[in-house]
Length: 163
Image (tube, rainbow, N blue to C red; front, side):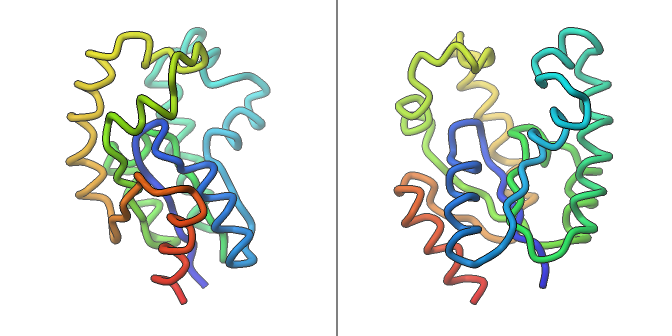
């Protein structure tokens, strides 16, 4: 069975919905950011600081290619992963992409004043990035789900598509 790959902006619920969906469907949950951090032995923030974004994006591409080889998994991607066509092509080799389409206001409520989200320290820049990425998420997606719902309800809706 093919993977179900979740994409969306930071705070859209990819990780929490993915975990919930994996429980509902009896599948393994995989988070691409966690895989990269585990493999590199440092946080993504440190990878960006030490090696730069291009280096991280190459690691992410390798991760997407590897994840596509997995079977029957729920995959949560990083917020920028499907904004790169090479990642979308790789991921689609192993499954269907579901975009968790959450409103920016809902994302702001979820993230709050989190210090772990450097891109969210400036709300105007975050909104510009959200606007820029949304069309790329839509283009990558095989399915679009309302990401404003609770994690459980979102997961149940996705599960109903893949029954």
